[in-house]
Length: 193
Image (tube, rainbow, N blue to C red):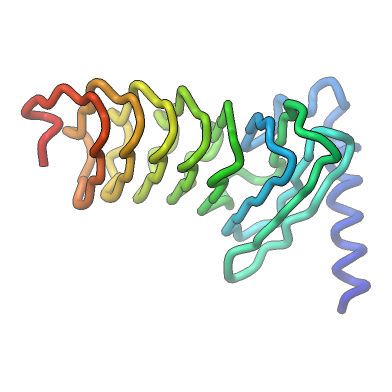
């Protein structure tokens, strides 16, 4: 069983390299994140195998499971790196990239992503306009100033405290739980629950 798993991981890594020429591979990433941190910790829930490109020529394979897969990686130093995920975008259901000093996060190709945990990072922007399947979104303790939720009709739970959000329109969501304190929010009728 262990040897089968090793062969499967090797096949997936080689498939990514073969299918996408190196100069085009970033166009096919389903998640892209940029970090300055040396030690990275990620958790995913997926129903298909995925590959993580750690941005330094090293790859890890995420084997589809019935539970969360926890993946860690340590770089030799704390330089800026771009991490990319490859695989079927419609199979990634939950992504937890909390506490990784992320300065950029692109999940726009994941229209079936249901839950995103990206709190305690250094994000200034977060584009979730294509993530129409979101039920829960957690991005507290960042530097985010605005968020467009006009297409997030399934969004019911959100934690966005300790950011720089000035205005928040929840009128297109089905918000049931919101934690949004320590933001300079201008409340209007649409933003109230």
